[in-house]
Image 1 (spheres, rainbow, N blue to C red):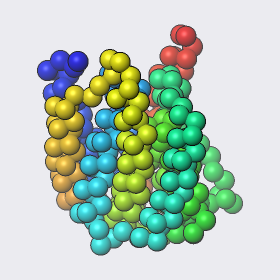
Image 2: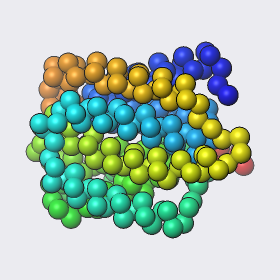
Image 3: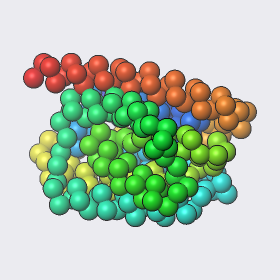
Image 4: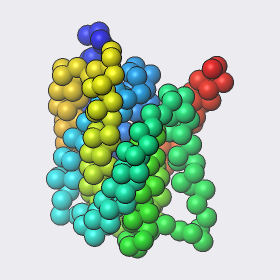
Length: 250
């Protein structure tokens, strides 16, 4: 059971991370996932993160709905469903250290994609591949934003279209994650996510997403791409170090 100070701290973290996600279309979920993995067992952390991010991304998708590329969303959803089905057959639960390690490695793996293999979510096969790979990474590490960004960063889409389309794809991804981990939390003794925590997280996710809208309008496409990369790489470095430390201490 989380204490009151921890609940307040978690609520403020959700507020800040939802603002970051609303501004950059990623990064916020990555920060939140790292904190939840420290505070909660892995299945509970994955479930609460999924609920929070489903709310945040869903509201962001609604706010920017006229900028959504629904062709990309549909193909992504098909790929994500295939990956979710494959994981459901296995029923794997990732280790905390392995999750943090993968969380930290994901942005570097995304940047390692050669220019000759440039990924573009507007290409039908690439959108399907994005759904399958991102869903797999999401069920292992909790987030897939940096990898998903690799499918958008070299496209000619505007920042509003990138944020709106990524948010809509993530709605599907987090819904599958919630459905995957909810039975694990319900069946495991001592593992629970309190209703108060869920309610606080949902309210703060909505508030943070609303606050980010005006900031995104004031930002240029160049600033958007530059700052999002710096933020994600800095956060990834911290989680990579934490994951290596936990695995080395076993």
